[in-house]
Length: 347
Image (cartoon, rainbow, N blue to C red; front, side, top):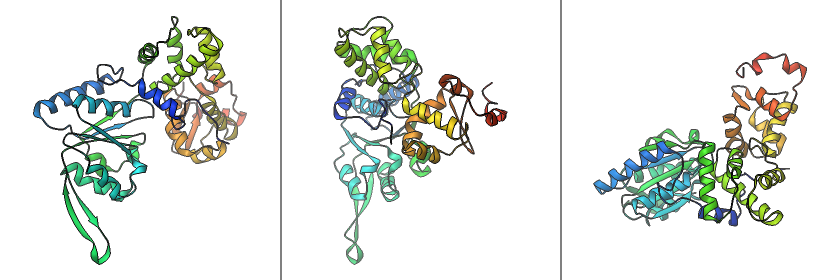
């Protein structure tokens, strides 16, 4: 049975999505963190405006919840253009893309989330649109088939993906700007939470937002989601004011530990340690053991565990590290302890 988790980016209900959207910054000045990306985008936007041209195509890649969609919205706002959005899985055939492209005006931003999931025919159909701003669209089929050349207005395509390695080289090469969106520091997350708390008119005692930031896995989406959970707990179980005690109790109820790990993270590590004797184990085997999808483990669970040094990827599979064993109080079998290569990179 799949494990329910408070920080799963794939389990947003409508209310939570509206909550996150309402807290999103609208301009580069309001955006916190990702200083290098913001500086480069700011220069590119200023130069494009001075020349009276649309921006080059942009690709944002990195783990979920770090603000790729937010950055796309900010680019559109800063350029003074409209944003039209879709996603890779939603564009099944050339006609779907044609419907989007035919409604794009001069300078508009077309945003495609999870762009690595575009089918090959759709991807190849987009190439001339990105390069020459025209497409060859085939109507009818068989003997009656004919190809119509459609000129397009100059636009900016912004792609976002959590799996940059799955994007084909031809598609990647057509993006003029490629930016890796990285995890946020504790200080940046505290700033984001402070801004969110002010927007929500939420009263907080000193140190409470830092406490939430420490357990937010370096991810703004998680930080805002935990803030909402803590706010609800404070309203029902307390006076509505966030205190350190209220935050601790709320996060304990949500099964979020001191490093931000939730039950799925801990189950992943326990499976490696107890079922596979510390590894190496293939991701498909771990997914089958947990009853979870492979994509969920690769996109949502692994990035943070790799960042904090709890899991190591090898050619033979995933391995747990000594740091993870210490954190969870796990003791490996005597057989595995006798294999020093498991821990050789931890010392």
